[in-house]
Image: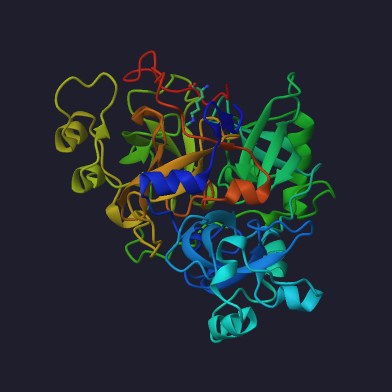
Length: 461
Ligand code: MLZ
């Protein structure tokens, strides 16, 4: 599963150029580094970069102009090339290869024009003065901001609670093993298998501080000692030094109090993204109401008798929808497995003698996220969350996005919220030194054994 394939290393620039696709702007990813500073970056701005079109033995630099932006990456053209695109090249604006205009002057490095255009002018200094007057460049502290915005307070050795990837209705205790670019590799504690890991982003809704499970009433698979200690610690609010500080975790959105005092109740029906097959939105039921606004949701017709595949969603989660949401938005709703008649909510509610959860209870806020169908992103394959893959947003329904993994069958697609911390701008992996999974090459399309019935396993292969 390397980042290379038969055609050589994957090149995002070539990929977006050949597919003629846009990439989602960095500003769309609130959790991603530099998201809040990306207004500093624009097409037309000038930077200083290595001049590779040159025979000198020492490294020299030249001015280049940003002609296209794809996530963190930019396509550059050396100043003086005008309409000539022959030496255009892509690079990552958040790495040390790109510098603000003026950088060479401050460290005493010469600006040397590329060989291809050397003959064009004699007065290069005058040329540059003319070209650079009034030009926009990166702010001088751009890299300081890059470094600051990459900061992550999770440290290896810290302890927390995380969803059990093999039995998603339960939480387990885990220890942070590694942190890369705000993504965390967790190792389950009390596991037979030392490589029993789970990757997620630090803002993932799947991780919580020590004591959370008992606080909200979520099932927890842990030793009696852990349970007793974590309960005592939560009550006294005194955590151990190696317990992750609770303020490192993503806060759930406070819901404005509904004047009608409606609430989620056990048995209410809704539509939910199936946590074990993220390409489907399914008929679902509230199975348990926990404390602090958390719900255990079961997918109708899929549930194991012991409820081991119930899944915890917060009531403000953007992964649950009111009855009728799919119909309204022309999304295929997956009916309960054994349902033979064409699925109609009214009949189903009558037949199961149940109520639809009131529309008012759902998160209906649609942020101005900026994602559009066709945009390229780097996306975590949440079924194998150590994989960050080349992907395309293929549908936008309000705040909900359908992400397609380039080269893979549609059955691998995933519905995700626009604020999911598992989506990154193009160039994120390169910037973080994390391997990027290239598109699957079409020669041998993968076939699923039985895509219609078999739910994907959460287990990482
Ligand atoms: N073992 C898996 C890898 C799938 C990864 C897909 N990522 C989009 C399989 O071949 O099914």
